[in-house]
Length: 147
Length: 147
DNA sequence: CGCGAACCTATCGTTCGCGATATAATCGCG
DNA sequence: CGCGATTATATCGCGAACGATAGGTTCGCG
Image (cartoon, rainbow over all chains, first blue to last red; front, top):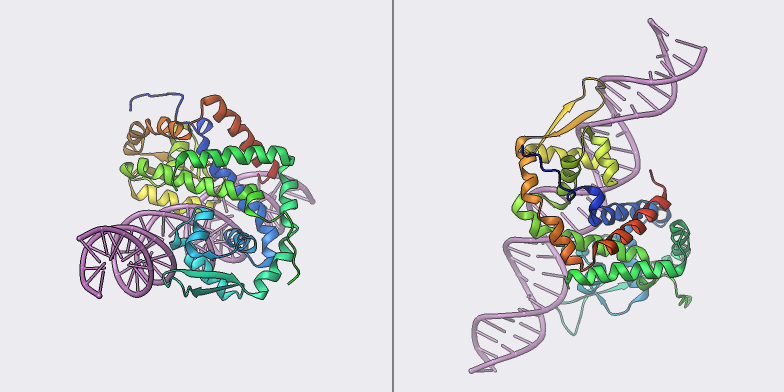
């Protein structure tokens, strides 16, 4: 009822709006590139972690992507069902589940190598600008301190 | 099998990783602020559109947030069930559904007014830096050209 | 006016994403 | 060694998020 018309609380003033909408846009940008590989966008992000990293566990993958294990576990099961990923209990610490790649999962990497360049092209930014922007986003995430 | 070890395809080189993870972080940052209001993060974003805008339809709300109507429709139904929002067919164009606020939905605005300042504080950035960052994100989204 | 095209919303099935909770394994302190 | 606390994963229920599809409305061209 009260006619508060403050400058705050408009979408135009809020960073979260743009981060949110850009996240959606990234998903849509990647979709046509990932469909031929049979991967969803979050599955692709997990595969990148696996392609580059070693000694991956469920929890470690979640940390890298900022996801809970309750999200990662079913995602990995789908990748396992697709024949791309292996999951087995660690022998050293049986609480952990070590996640690895099948030969098919490793081979898929070659089919995905062209994607980063496509996306970089779509941004219209040069590597320096991307670097600078990433530093800001990383700093922001760190400022939230949710580790 | 082939030992490709290119510099590409590592999480450290990819902008999408940071946008993705930051989006998750924003959701977690807002959660404790929104729980007292009984809103989820996407519901809050919709409410902001409604608090500021006029003449809102399902499709228009989706445009603002970068969401499909198949996402917005059930979301609005939950807000309607919560007594915050009204939905009714336009009399001028019966394809459209006009979305408005109930008194309770309008009143909720006052309880949310403090939130933007909290978030701005958490970022550790001054308004100018936020402005500059937002411009980059908006530009990026525009470059993807998914309107 | 009439009819096909375009438009707006809703529904369905699948995949994410979280918190709460459960279960099992390891750690640490006495 | 022994037992509580912590750690790691899995499960469940709910709320997003999308594409495909379907239904009804309006538009536009003949």
